Length: 101
Image 1 (tube, rainbow, N blue to C red):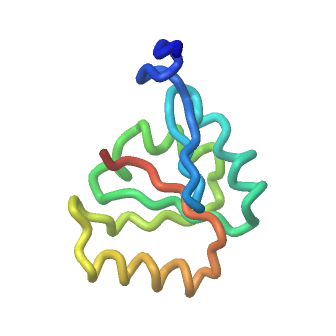
Image 2 (cartoon, rainbow, N blue to C red):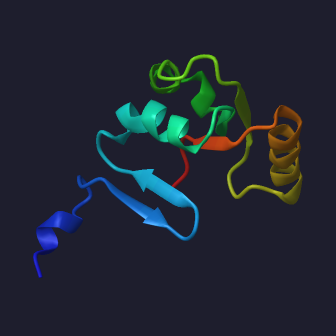
């Protein structure tokens, strides 16, 4: 088995049943991936990351999508409930999460 393809620089997708795509260069694929999944995307991040130039660059790929920045480290039930309410109220069909670890 060639393990070189499993390095940190490789981009890959994990689906169970929700697809999670990450790795080097995948940010440029966000518009295509989001469009394939629906028409009402929502950016999701935390209150610190939303202020960084990195987030501005990524968000410029789908600038009209609203941003939910109420995620906290080790999200609480309240934070998850607030996100769920935002998704329901905005009738979002795509969640684009930026950050995490």
